[in-house]
Image 1: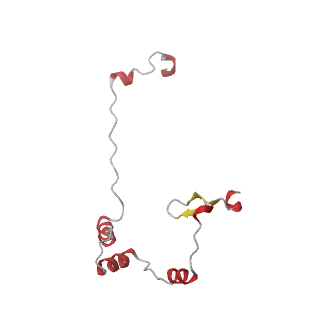
Image 2: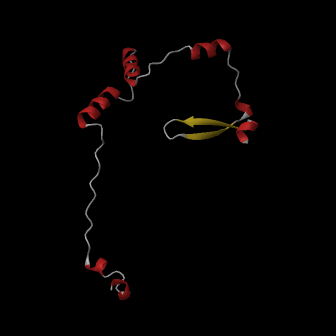
Image 3: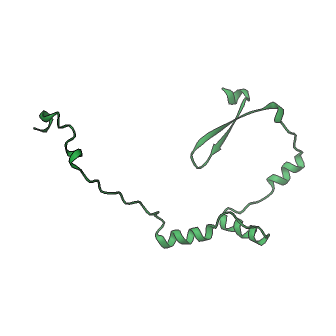
Length: 107
């Protein structure tokens, strides 16, 4: 109802498949020229993060991530992340005595 009334904006999060709700503040409305909109929409971005990182390096910027290295490591290790080994639980005398006040349950 709030979205239909124009009181909130819903932005989809592709990672978690959830919508994020932002208030629609009428004081923050800005007019953008159609020329600027066309320029923005006309920019083609590479689909692969490796290409984006190469373009950043070519322009003298340092990318925040190293996708190529991460892909190499994933291929070498077989893509599956390391799973933590669970510790085997040791039972103490105290643990064994739990519910000792209910002997009928153990017969």
